Image (tube, rainbow, N blue to C red; front, side):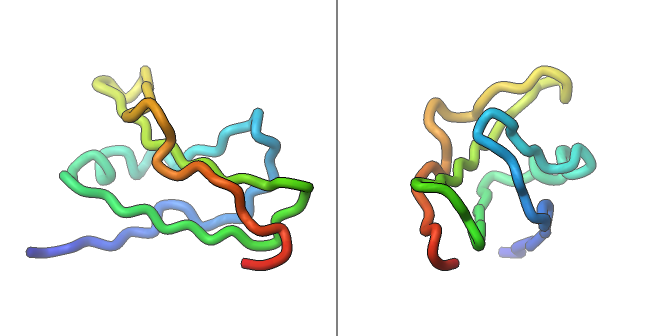
Length: 84
């Protein structure tokens, strides 16, 4: 079985929870090709009293209208404000 590893997002994010950040649309076709997907995230230098990281996979039949793939986020939890 062949596996593909692709870095689709590699940036610092400075955003409140009301401002979602999306991967670049150039990866939409590539990410939609596979039956299985793995997510790897590193949270570092988080601030605040209870920082969280939420990752939600979305899907679209037309590339224009997007819906969450699952009801709950694939990754949704608190992260440490004191370490990586």
